Length: 329
Image (tube, rainbow, N blue to C red; front, side, top):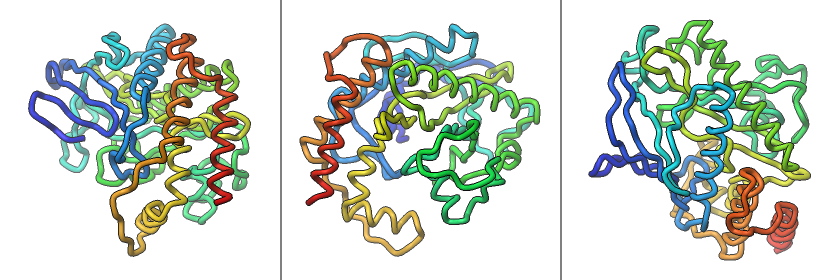
């Protein structure tokens, strides 16, 4: 994120406006305002926008927070302000490498991304690591490498760094030590992640979708209690499927992966020499399809007719037809 005048932080897809800074012993306040931009492959903001994407993300995120708060889960969500914006409690951002975090530190963002995996679909980073031999099945509780899209017997919880220039995959003990957490705190965080995952699985199933994987972020409160923060359970943070077809930002990743720009990104990720120009905008007809996808899933998820978007099944058929046309070219 980039800091700009007026206490605003411009992220990849949302603008955070700081209303009151946090302290070691008290929450701050901020608003999240969602935009129609998108990012993929850790590249940053792409050159065009997806109409209604920001509103769909905001509505789904608010719905998820409100539903989980009913179960007693502690979150930073305060209130909805508009279809594009909501208010949150904020915590401090402290960096492990600076020595700012200890087992007694309070009111800070835990420097981890917590990933839950119910299957390893196409595009899964874990599946790539397993297939390359960089990760052994036994290290994540598996007896073999699953097939692409195969439902796992139980969810896998995976961790990466959060505040480094490039995310690193961490083993459980490495993640716990990096975050200066006790074994009890770490186990509680994992149980909270599993609870969020179970909620998303049940919600997705209720509208005919499969929840493949997703991620959350957590923080410690001023009393060093665990709290769910940022956003989760949207088409940007999670991957949902209908009959094996992605209903998430993966649709955009798949398109760019076939372009020359995408091939250069692959070289970069593999540590090979690459030449990366600015990416070209998405084709207009694909922008329209992806926009409808965000709107349709959002309407089903929150149970409201907001834009009168086409049914999810129809969107999947249209995206499949588009993909087949592109592949045939």
